[in-house]
Amino acid sequence: MKLFDVYPLYNVSPVKAEGAYVWDEKNTKYLDLYGGHGVISIGHSHPEYVKSITNQLSKIGFYSNSIQNPLQTELAQKLGEVSGCENYDLFLCNSGAEANENALKLASFKTGKSKIISFNNSFHGRTSAAVAVTDNKNINAPINLQQQVVFLPLNNIELVIHEIGKGDIAAVIIEGIQGVGGLDEGTTAFFKEIEKICNKNNVLLILDEIQSGYGRSSKFFAFQYHNIQPDIITTAKGMANGFPIGGVLISTTIEAKFGMLGTTFGGSHLACAAAISVLDVIKNEQLLENVKNIYQYFLEEIEAVPKIKKVKGKGLMLGVEFDFEVGELRKKLIFEKQIFTGGSNNKKLLRILPPLTITKTQIDEFITALKEIL
Ligand SMILES: Cc1ncc(COP(=O)(O)O)c(C=O)c1O
Image (cartoon, rainbow, N blue to C red):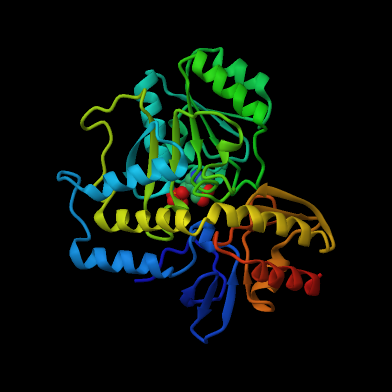
């Protein structure tokens, strides 16, 4: 059997990883400024994380959601504490798309409505409702087109007010900072107005923090820059440093009913052990502080690199926009300088999503490589 060929692949095969570095089968060392799509939060193979998963697996790795699992409760408590979002309940699932799928379903259950407002250039995943609210026709199959979705430009509050005024909107879904789209984001005024108009009109505000959450913006969630309280927050990627998990943080105003949501694998003992150790490391190693410091350092140092138009994003969710398309530059960074970076819908933008543990010396490596190539 061969693999279903859906991914364009770089010819690199990592076999080992530690911190912000990855080694291939020939023992070539790469600096990882992309964390496998922003998944590696506390660094590859963090010793606390490895210990925690290994210990858990030797006890019990999985049982279904029909028994008590104190690790789920511990995870919810710690997530509430570390994120500052104590007024939410947690539903655990297995991926970002699944988290958004459940969030959209909850909004529809709660409001009795089914139309969703999403934004131009958004990405929310590839399952049924999640892909329908994703602004990319190429990844929507005919079966996905039955969902009722309206796409609006970011930061045009008048259009949001107009759509919500029609009375049939169940939810507004928006990324804290757009990832795949190319690091655009709503202004504080925009987020605050959306919150206000949603509250007035029985519309739920869903914050997709799957890429921008878990400390990546230097706040725990990027929406925390805007002093708002979403009804639902979705999270995944950095949540368990590579172990598959997703989470839906649900306002306590939304009442749970048995059977309303469910999953076989979500919230397994092993996934919880992985996610708890990520929160412990974020807290104990003060990673949000590191993200803040490195962000400042990055902004200062990148000034010396030529041909840059703009640096977008916040913390360690960054987009470096050039005045040319970056495909060749990314190849040179990998194959000549051994540095992984990411791309986005904006072809002129390098997406930088390193582990939150990254150091100034490692940023220097990147800056030097860019200067040498350019
Ligand atoms: C903002 C955002 N939402 C949702 C998803 C989907 O997550 P997953 O690939 O885990 O389904 C992604 C993945 O890139 C994302 O960036």
